[in-house]
Amino acid sequence: MTNETGRIEAFSDGVFSIAATLLVLELKRPAAGMPFWLGILHQWPGYVSFLMSFLYIGIMWINHHRLFTHIHGTDDVLMVANLLVLLGVVWIPYPTLLMAEALAGGSIHEAAIFYNGSYVVLALLFNLLLLASVRRGLVDRSYVGVQDIAKRFALGPMAYGVTFAITWWSVPVSLALNAGLALFYLLSPDKRARVSRRS
Image (tube, rainbow, N blue to C red; front, side, top):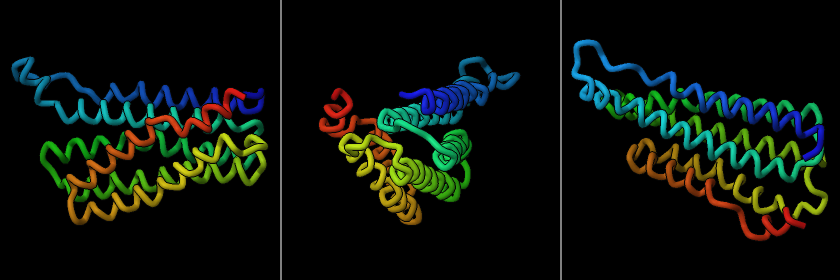
């Protein structure tokens, strides 16, 4: 990490941490007049939204960090691309909350379209950040370490696009695929990338 990229990473980490911390504000106290534990259980959609959003923000932070281990410089284009990714990060809790509320009783199909569509956009933004760093010559000169990240990022828009399309056929299947993609991006890249980072 250089002084240039250090400021971007510090700012980005701050946005990620604030976005994750503010999630708890969506958890409300039990309704008045309702037994305490029943009131707690009644708010299960909020807990689902909190846990999903925290997990997904954490996974996005991990992938953002993995990419920036290969970025050695910065310019205005990279900073704008990074800001767009951060915009997507702070946006994600909103469709997640709507999705959780819909699961409790609402228009689940429309909420799922909105939810899965948000991840298509976010996948495109991560690819924009990668493209900006590569095209501007800001990644490792060998480009070996970032190749595996590039392959995984390139899969994102297509995979999330398929998930988005499946929403019209089956909401449960689309949500399961979305969760599966989150776990895929949680896994470490190829060993070759890890070896490259050590060298």
